[in-house]
Length: 247
Image (tube, rainbow, N blue to C red; front, side):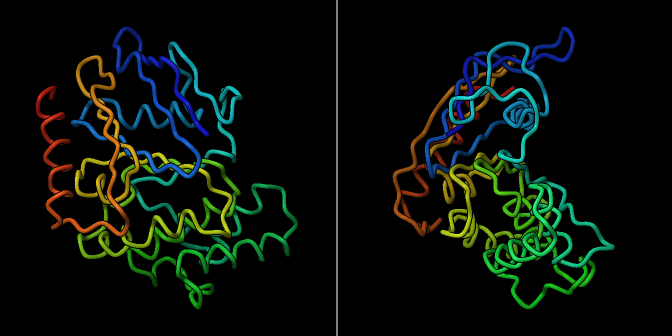
């Protein structure tokens, strides 16, 4: 669904990453991990067309990505909801970005609100919701735009651990729900437990300039249990890859 071919990016004369190749297959959940400063967030923005690569290209279903598109939506680390809008109004913004008339946008928004588990909260304002619920609103708004790929920039980073754990348990089934258009996810995180819990494939971005130093396929059945010895083996493996080439 999404492919990065020999991507490189520099800020002026400072090279951030180079020779980055990533594939997101249909219904694939890809996670990118690496130390701070490796350029993970920058890479995510290049994948979404928000930044132009210095070299290489990004393909979405075979077509080059040269600018932002509703087909690739992003959920940010900072929980972005509009405080003066209700849950329904927030989510409708995603549907209206598709050019849908108001009533059709409302129907799509209601469906996505149900997908993320917030039915009954349509008329609530963000200040009345927990952090986890606000992030579900942000996810629902992104899904309402009818994307093919969702980019997630540390979406659980600002949540307490119990809330993050609950959202992680739900997010895979939420994103790949039969009522969504989504065909692939790319998420970045520093949390290796989070990576193993969610990913089909984990890419390790490391070095300076950074490049992909490892690709790990997570072959564990879902739902995944962090106390499972096989789960722990994966987290230890990822730690070794990151620590072995840390900046």
